[in-house]
Length: 294
Image 1: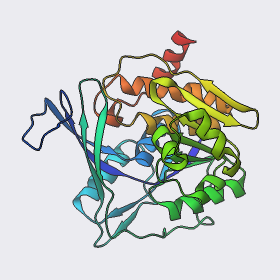
Image 2: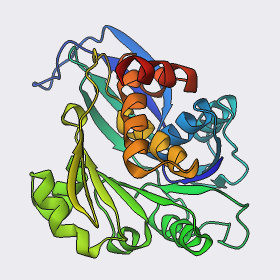
Image 3: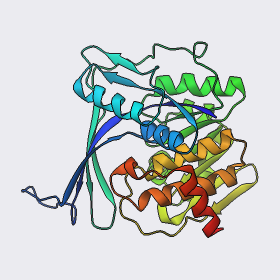
C-alpha cells in the first residue's frame, strides 16, 4: 500500500531527565539522542516499518538540518522525491525533554522562510492508496486531502492544534489528540467535544487519549476503544506512529475499529522504547503483540 504523507519533518534533540525543570538554572540530562521527528515524518517512518510505502510531502530549508532530516528518512525507506528544499529557508527542529515517567515536554521551532504552496499539485501526485496530513502545512494538506477525496481513498487528518476548519471537512477521517480537540472545542471531555464538532466534520472523527484509549464519533454515535496496557518508557512520537498505523490499515481495507486496535498496538510498542520514533515497531512485532493480547 502506498501512503502519501504531508506535513512536518524535523530533528529532535531528546534529553532524558528525572523530572521537568521548574527553575531557570542548569540541569543535567542522563542521556541524549539526536533523532528525526515531526508528526508526518514519524508517521511515514511507521508506515515504512509496518510494510507500507510512504511518500513524504514536506518542506525543508537548504541547510544542514534539512539534509539530516532527509538522510534519516531515506535510510528508513521513505520516498523523499517530493520533499521541497527552500534556498534561504530554515528547517524545523525541536528540543524534547523526557522524564522518568516517559512523558515529554517539547519546545518546537517550526522552520522559517519556507514556501506556503507546494511545488506539486493534485494532478502530479503519483497514485496512492490513502493520504495522511498533519496541520503544520495547511495549504499542502488541503490539496492532498482534496485529492484523496476525489480519488475515493481514505484521507486522514492528524488533528493537532490548531485545526483549520477546511481540513476537518476535507478529511474522511480526523483523529484528534486530546489537546487538539480541547483547543478546537473548549471541552476537556472527549465525548462532549466530539459530539459538538461532528456535524462540522467530513464524516468520522476520534480523539486519542493515551492510556485512556480512543474515543470515537461517527454516524452511529459515540464509542470507545481501550488502550493496551504497557510499560511506558518514552511517549515521544506515540501519537504520530499511531496515525501511521491507522492510515495504513485503512488503506489495506480494514474497518476504522480494526485500524484503531492495530494503531493502539503500534503506539503501545513504541512507548516501550526510548528515542522517539527509533522505537517504532515492525509489522511482525505488532502482529505478535496482537496475537498475545487479543
